[in-house]
Length: 127
Image 1 (cartoon, rainbow, N blue to C red):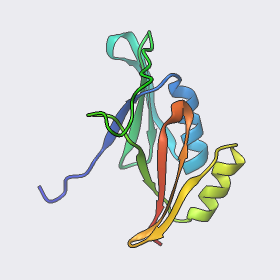
Image 2 (cartoon, rainbow, N blue to C red):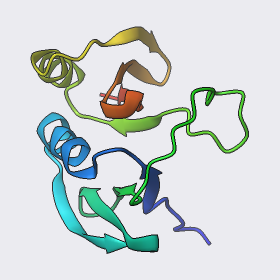
Image 3 (cartoon, rainbow, N blue to C red):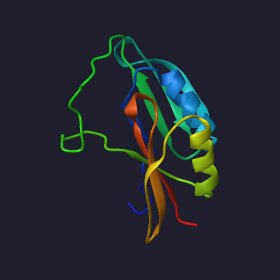
């Protein structure tokens, strides 16, 4: 299996359309599909040609106040590789979001921010 790669991640969010719209604006992604999903829920697939994030919402949201990096099967963050990290950071700030935890170490540069539902995203550049 030399050519295995991650095609998508599926996340439960409160508003798939709003989160997808934000990711389109920040990363120049596209909506690949949207429609009815599991258990009468709704999903939006947003990303590029090779991979995407499936943003799902069930008819009734159940929120966990204690989810963190110590919980098994918790999503800690998504990592998004970009060509121009400075331009993406400016775009993120222009949308009222706050980058944090900047680091520059091998093999690249990175920072984090929180999107809708406190979804943590790591922005990475290997340029």
